[in-house]
Amino acid sequence: MNAKIITEFIGTFFLCLTICTAAAFGVAGDFAPFAIAGTLMVMIYAGGHISGAHYNPAVTVSIWLRGTFDRSDLTPYILSQMTAGAIAALVTANVIITGTIADEFNMQMFDPNSNQTISILASEFLFTFVLVYVILNVATSESTEGNGYYGAAIASVVLAGALTVGQISLASFNPAVTLSLSIAGKMAYADMWLHLVPQLLGGCAASYAFLYTDG
Image 1: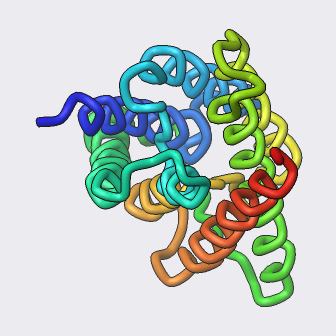
Image 2 (image 1 turned 30 degrees about the horizontal axis):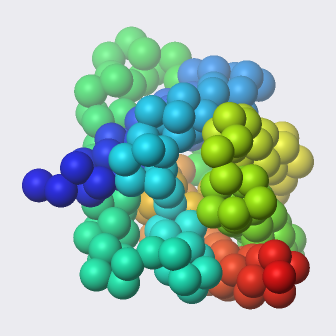
C-alpha cells in the first residue's frame, strides 16, 4: 500500500481517536481542545514530509483545487481518511471507553434544534475556511516554503476554533471527524449535513481566496 495513504490513515486515526475520547466522551474535560491540537500538531510533523499531512478530506479537496495535488490521489486520500475516522470511533467506543470507564464518562449527544442551524453552519464554514486558508499559506505557498512552524500554526487554528465554537457546532471542521463523531454516537447521522456541507464549501472558498491573495 502507498506510504502516503498509510500516513494519512495513521494521522487521521489518532486525530479522530483523540477527539472521540477527549471531547466526545469528555475524558479530558475542559482540556480537550489542547489534547486535540497537540495530537494534530505532532501528527502533522510526523507525516508532513510523506503525505502532506492532510488528515481531512476538506483539506485534500482544497489542495487539489489549489493545483498542487495529483488528482489520482484524491479518492485514495479521502477513503483512507474517512476509513480512519470510522475505525477510530469504533476503537474508542468499544476498546477504550468500556466497563467502569464507560459508566464514569457518559456521552451527551449533540442534539441541535432548528434555531441553531444557522449558528452551526456558520461556525463550521468560517473555521473550516480559516483552517484551510492557513494550511494553504503555511504549507503550500512558495513564500513560506521550508518553514518550521507550519504544524504549530495549523494546530493553533484548530485549538482556537474548538475553544470558540466547540459548544456551538462541536468544532469538527473535518468530514472524517464528523463521521467519527456520528459513529461514536455523539452526533446523529441525520445531522451530519450540518457539518459536511459548510466544511466542503468553506474549504473550497479558502482555496479560491488563497489563489487570489497569493498572487
